[in-house]
Image 1 (cartoon, rainbow, N blue to C red):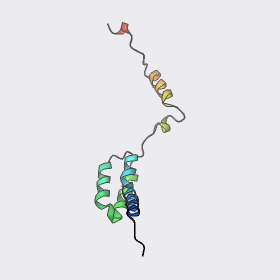
Image 2: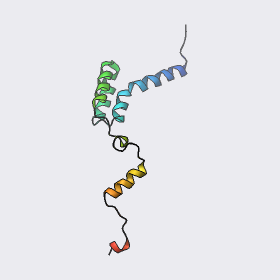
Image 3: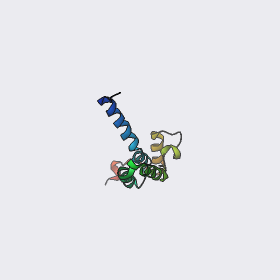
Image 4: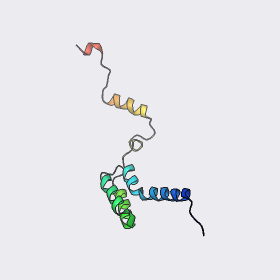
Length: 99
């Protein structure tokens, strides 16, 4: 008969916890507007399996975040800042402007 060591039990518990919070983590990474409700559903009913699947589907149904790479593919942060300042006619304030 094989007995589980405390280290094995801790490892299994950590893996189970990591899997259990996947729906909430997905909702957070996608910046879902109902993140707290998804996390509450996952916490309350995730242990049933059906609640976990429902929370995961709900987390995936939200809008995917718009990333800078979608709008400005191939540009660096510095390039975006320079373009922004040019588009908005930005200029530094000089002492002449602060009369």
